[in-house]
Length: 448
Image (cartoon, rainbow, N blue to C red):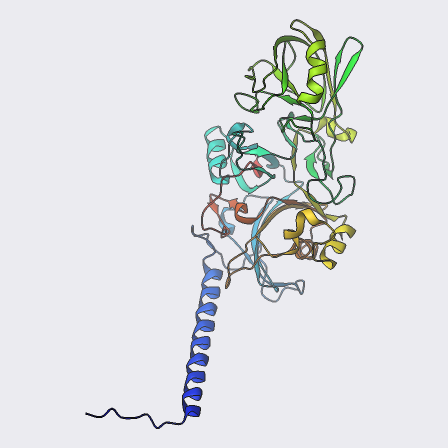
């Protein structure tokens, strides 16, 4: 048997191959369209019901910014007075989820919650809200907040880098460093959000101004419940940190007979009950541990024996922060009084070169943020890393979009795979890995 030779023109083969490729591309696009349409009707692994237009929802013909392709209300039947929940579709191909609270709502308030009620360790937003519910606190919405360490060789997984004030207690405050590639004195640098007792919203860098006085000697305290090292040489550790300080080779002094908890405006006498030159001291439930890094600590090790008495003083600045009952830190301010921060504009123009430590902010990723206007508070999550659903936003994209939807001031929170917005019982967005990542703390809208 002789094999039949293929006498077809090679050009015909090329044309057939091109047709097959075109058919494949067409089929792929159809699949992406179907996925995109599907994502609009079911935005997450736990269904959140969309409701037909009512007086609370945006009608199709309502005027909206050019950057907004669509806005839908989510689960309006469960909205209490003063609360709203929306999903926006940005024209740049991103899904943005926004929980809003009217600032004058008598039945609602802003709050924060530390993961597992201590610094060391992490917890999902869902886990935190369930734990609060068991304690009689009804949350309406929560978003992942501060930045921190997920794990290191010292066992400090879950360590917050930012400020955290809860129920008036100063739980954590860092020494402001050039950690993000832009100097903290800049308005764009490390920023915290807080609420004063009379309802004023604050958004700015916060400084500790801590001092330890022993006789004629004064020691400046750099931070509370942070890493003690050469960049931050003097740190106070409170029971909120965990069982022990997890330091190595620091000189440490256990202080008791002082008033707890620490607050933004604080003065108390103390007595030194233990001295340790090896670090990792146990933190007493009724005291604090003062840790000093080795090069500075040796001097004080000789000056502070057991039974030494002294005075501890803290006075946060700006001064209004001394009375703040609820506060949470992020890393960058995005909007100030309705204007994008000039450093952020330059950052976008140079594609991240102007702030080397935060180059990923010039790329599209999932994001989380907090914002406010004269009459509303916003908790916001941007989905990302999901072709066909949402590609994410750059920091500049996010600031520009927030301004379009009415936000006047905004701060950037930890993003990426941590970005999750819990609202009315469910995670309403689509986290990058299809599951909630444990985080450090939560910014909340809750019932009073």
